[in-house]
Length: 460
Image (tube, rainbow, N blue to C red; front, top):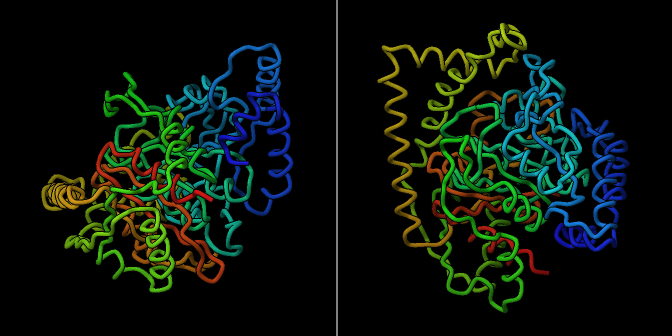
């Protein structure tokens, strides 16, 4: 049963919302001690909400599109009355005093928030090994990292602990763990989804997005959380399509991708492991069999993407963390955070000094414009860019990587954040039983094309 079929079964009274919640609670109780995907549970409130939904359905009252579906939330998105720690000791005692806009919309749609997912501390990582609450284990590749920084949400989906998880993606933090865990993850166009209530990592790059086991989990979430928010200045005022209806329509076509051009970038292949490329090529061939036309592309700026991303990230992260001074709430961040967070703060502080900002930060912003222009130019000739999500397989938990080795996981995902374009990762296959992701990127505000492509790819 896919996520849409489950949502319909609940609305039709064929499956009780309470049973859906209780089933997930049993799985969480059984698996979470080993996987560590959830760091706080909301059991009593979830059961109460499920009973209310079942009562509404029984009485013939209208319920929302997410009615009875169970959702996990990354620990950096504000949920009232739950601990919003961002995976850090700094905020271990911070209880959310309000709901982020995306949370309000989920609750209005009758989604049930089961708990808070583990993550890299302050989203500064690609493995979910830096969490104050302990490492998150990969249910799809036991003993290996789950990816990050939204690793807890990806692990929760992969281990069937919830229907949908919300994460944040600044340089690949939804797509990276989705690739490593073999699930679907979506980073929307910058501004499509409100960031109000998200704890910043890098405000000009951050986006909230969904993870799920199939396209309908993504589409139902996007239909709920996308759209203009008057409280958030970066949100777009444009009309939002019905993602779920579009995903359904695609599945009815004989050649669902006919007329669509997909671009394969030579340089993306060159930086990726050959075994990963083999699996990704098989997925690309599947898209061609569904009617897509393949176009070969070149991208000459791949070498500057990581340094550009991290220079911007360091400065904006330093700025964002100045509020964690221990006076209003939490502890002073420099005195309570882990090694990677402290590294980013110190480098960000250094770059932010007046004599260096022009040399580093402003040049990074210029490089970002160059990258964005080049990506948009490439996307004039194709509908989508397809290729590996992550260039290498996840390492074994406990293996110590140098910072640049860890950052290398992000080389193919930071591009979408720098350019502000939508991107997703879906399961392409496995290498030595380890999941490998196919990344799909599109023009700004062409999020629908990605959803349609995922839907076509998942036709059984």
